[in-house]
Length: 89
Image 1 (cartoon, rainbow, N blue to C red):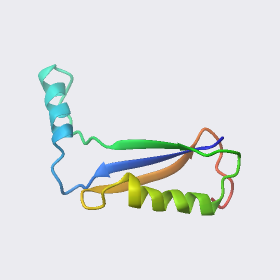
Image 2: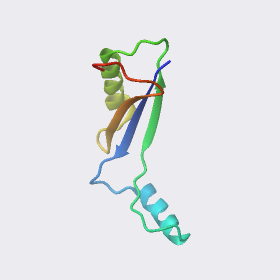
Image 3: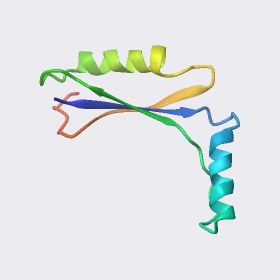
């Protein structure tokens, strides 16, 4: 069964308080100075073995409409993991 991963991140122009808190914790604990942005990862496991362009297009639509808030977030990735993507998909 293929798994499709959707990655969502806060829009670049918006403050990311969670990322800022993580960066502060890294600095305080002596682990280095980093800029950090925290996002979300969704894994959608597809029943069966069929992976088509239509299915990926539907997942992109789901990502934009349901998995992300388009006012404050961007969908930055939709990709298949755990197997080769068929040619043309």
